[in-house]
Amino acid sequence: MKEFTYVITDAQGIHARPAGELVKAVKPFSCSIKIVKGGKEGDCKKIFGIMGLGVKKGEEVVLKFDGEDEEAAYETVTKFMQENL
Image (cartoon, rainbow, N blue to C red; front, side, top):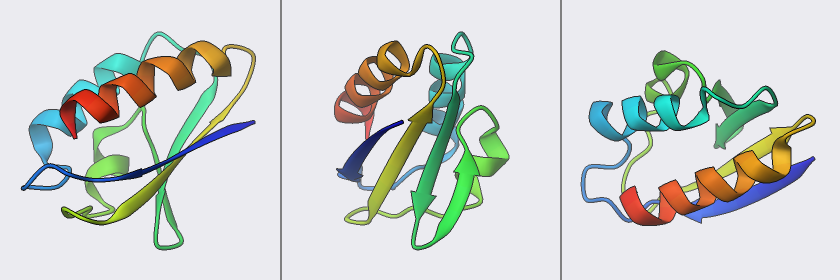
């Protein structure tokens, strides 16, 4: 299991467009990918799981990867977060 902690820098937080792009980015991976904020957890493969957390600018999220292709998923998602959020 791998984890990545990230502080959101996008002025609008995680809104619909980047949430949808994140779902597209993680779709090819078979491992479990969760996003956690303040004790609440969402599935990165479901847009409502991400949007339901209501992540705002300056808030910290933890992304958790668990499964056989977790290393590749970790690299893809960390790059996505740094470039888009």
